[in-house]
Image 1 (cartoon, helix red, strand yellow):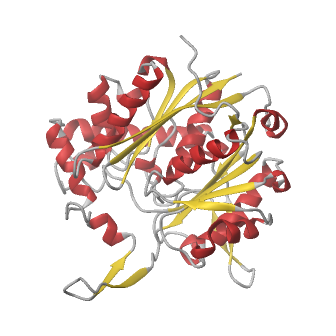
Image 2 (cartoon, rainbow, N blue to C red):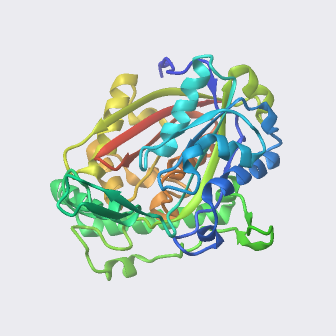
Length: 399
């Protein structure tokens, strides 16, 4: 296998300097009651303390979220204050691609020499998402009201259609069968519960206590609440909402946070719990598919990335994606003649939920953990985002 030039040669992800909350389903936990930005900052401090990382070593913070939260105007500065480290930073938002874009932007920040150690912190709370009122002088209604999460899921302003319809469109375009999509979904649930039983999930997800404004305990978030085993028989009995799409073959809204570090090569060796492991950024690609064709976009992005890198799927040690619809994985498998049983080991967003901002961040850290277990290799992570966007990134784990 030929060695591929990396996009951010000076940037590294120190092994073990990551973690996330569990992702409880919408309205299913005390996370529905908190300022998610404040919680994320505090949770980052807790996770890094468990990883034996002192936040004083950070000089920059990249945060990512998609749902407005109280004091979002102050973005990374207020979140860093909540973590106990007063440093500069900025906020990034690209719908479901946010979690991966934040990591890539941190890599660019370090590789440019602007920072030495960058914290990446992504989070979102879909529970009780805010409602906005917008004066629109050019609108017939003059005033528009929008529920940030649900109205955006249900209406693409470019097409007038819901995101769910994009999955149906692609299922029909590729001639997918309901049987294949149901079987794929049932297997994804098996993978997740195997990962939970083996303890793999617990290597990334950290139980976190939630406190109210008075500092009194409200409960502990210690599971992906709302995720239950599901059988192929029960999937087959569900009503079809669009072609190959049921309530069981799509993800669910959730709350949560995820964090990791990006540093220089030298600092990675001092911060990592296993300094012999080297994690590099290799390549990135983004594409935009046709209107209302979102589940097709990730496969197109992967195709572009592999072409640019001169690699194939056979070169990948780990393949893992953000799959809000099981259709996404079926289309990817069809496009590359790839066995979908080989990807998303130990869990994926289709099963453990979709809080948007931190979704792909959790995917990345789980993918890196899997690569370490395998002894290293190329790690392919990809997903879709609103606006029929596909994003893909390639990492290399050595050691």
